[in-house]
Image (cartoon, rainbow, N blue to C red):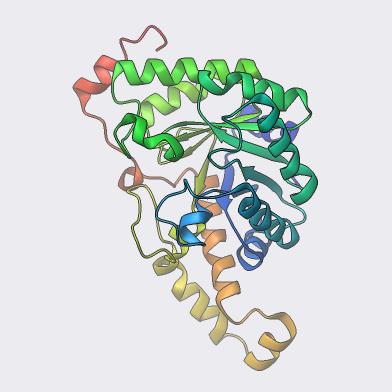
Length: 307
């Protein structure tokens, strides 16, 4: 059954961890839906992993709409989030609302995501007032990474934690339905997750949030340029499962012709299913895929007035 804002919040209340994955095209969204993922993000990261840009900054609204349309066609029964690219919401409330509504009307997304805290709270409020659900994004925010010295882990100092906490509260007050925390040590992210009423999901933020997000190209080992510290490729773990499945089939030609379940689409489904199982079981991310924090750093963060 397709998730809703209400059911996702209920999952947080019940401690049922949420599985979230990116997709940017028809095949991967089909595989994600077959695997039973709770949510799909059509991220502006698609500009890098799918379109070949060096960063997410060049991605346009028109490109995001095209990617989102393909994902909706591939996953008609999954909660889909459209990622608002740089330049689509910063200029004015009017532009932010117009582009958020484009995502809904032209691509059929269930929510939009945008980066920033207090500085975009008014944008969030206006989009929500227009009837579009919004997911916030704090921590490492790639669109504005240059403003804090590049791709750096957030929440490791009291100052950084305080700022993130205040941003999170401002976004919740503005009406977000969920929050994504990126690249934070586990303890600070867990604190924010426990305090907020809305679901808090992590990407590189430890396993103590209400769910996890991964980039599907990292999960599948499809992206050549780099792989983040927190990203896990599941192919080595599932290749034997896929091989056993293929070997057990008496008629591979029929399997391919009739079900198209003999190749990479099926392998993607198996890999995504393994990711979902690990998220739901609290096994991913483990320490190998979590940013460390020194004891003295955590002791200082724990002196925050928000701790």
